[in-house]
Amino acid sequence: MTTAAAPPRSPYLVSARYDAVWFLGSMAVPYAMGLVYWLVGPGEHKQVVVALYVAFQLLFNLPHNAQTWSLTVLEPHERQSHARRYQGSILLAVGLLAGTMALSPTWGWPLLNSAVIYWGYWHLIKQHFGFVRLYEMRRGVKDAFDKSLSRALLYVAGVTPLIQRVAEGNVTLDSGRGVPMVVAHPAIPMPLATGAWIISGVLLVLYVGRCLMAWRQGKPTAPLAVFTLLGALFNFWVSLQLIDDLIVGVVVMTVWHNLQYLGLVFFMSGNRARLQGGGAQLVKLAGDGRVGAYVGVLLVYAVVILACRVLLPEPWGAFPITLVVALHYFHDSFIWKISSNPTLRQELGMKAP
Image (tube, rainbow, N blue to C red; front, side, top):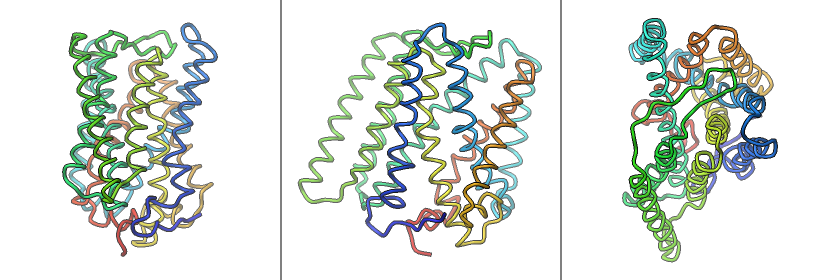
């Protein structure tokens, strides 16, 4: 199934139905998973946590992670153009992870793993802002102040629930495998968390007021960008303030982004295949509309990575999944930039070929 890009100045990135399923309505999926946890009951039901974690990795997180490779190291032209960047990042990540696990499994590895977790949180905030900007670009919202305000609100208010959680000291990851992990963190006084909430509230009022003022003055507005931004902030709050188990919180916090990414990259890959021929197999499958084969490749990848997590002894079981996740964060930091991908606007349907 192939989908054409939305017409210029359409509020949608692809179409009303496609956006509703993949970019907006998909928010309901992580809340359904959180509801399962709430109904069963928090506390000792670690089998529920494990089931949610496995479903999260197999159906959402690792499949979206695999898509990154179809746009980077598996794409012949991309791989040749940025060979040093890809080779260097892979060698550095392998050496750093393996060296830390081998030389300092009880001190250095937990510290490095915590750093990757924080990196993932920041990555999530940045990706949400990317969708906000796409919707703003669709509607012609170009004012520099509006862009800065939406960025400031998402960055500050997005980090605030984490600051609160750290200040409360509830930062233990326990998957029920008998090896709980406390995420390394600085000592954060509660007044600092309170101040972050106050600043977030001020930015929120300014942002909503600015959007209403632009609407009343007949200036370009992007309601779907507003929905995405406020939805992301609500998601962070629910995940870190209403869910006691941090693993379930990570699941609820991340699945919406995973589904958005799955939908966007499938659409983008189809456009890339039609515009450029696309060398990566996943790109070709998307271009041909072979959804079943596309999903099958993603699931096989997810099963292999997660199987390593289960079968290998600690801490080496975490090596494959941490490696691919960290590389995903790094590669994603530049493949969505026009400077790195001059055809990005065309592939996203923002500009005619």
